[in-house]
Length: 310
Image (cartoon, rainbow, N blue to C red):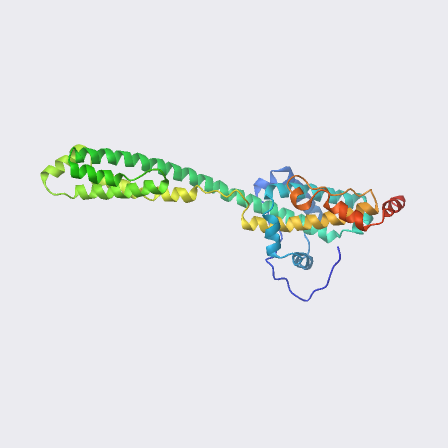
């Protein structure tokens, strides 16, 4: 990778060096592998981090990140990091001629950041699942309270046409959660209106039907359950924007590593190509780098380099 000088300070939202990883990531073999590589190589310095981060904008990161899923990219990236590390250990001179040590450190660092971002995303979604369960229980309680109030209102209405018509209008619909909430409000309002009637006769009718101020107030308190359940039930099927950003950074660095390793392979077959896994194949393409490099490099280069390899 050619290094160019620049006088402009980076303006993109640059990823920070990774902090301690959550326990979930450390429990996986990929998490343990990336931690081990990071401990051995150490973090990239701030100057190199800023220089590499400037090579792609946040818009570019996001555009790459939305094409894949974070956990799969993390797994594929760790596999490449292990292969790259092994290549540096076995054939350092050949690899360094095409791929810088600092780029390895940067890829490791960003891959670790992706793992941490995925863990944070999974924690948030786990909490959201708990919220969804709670809201489902509230919705069930709201429907049960509605049925109980309707029974009391029917007892109070008896066979009186005016009361029956009022109850029929208040019933509303229950085909959606928002409709349930609207029905609860209307029924509670009707119950409060009937309970406000004066005289001993109305009081006897309400008591006999089980229509009470406490029951009406309890139903009215549940009117928000349905609409809140609608919001709580939504669970994104894609990565969060903050995950997409670091995901895009990792994909960009993987693309550069693939290009550099293709050149190294053409110079000497001792260096294995980096082949995308199932999660990154659609972005990196298993044959893309090899075809481009083969078109540019003389066919005789690889045998000549291999003959002089240690």
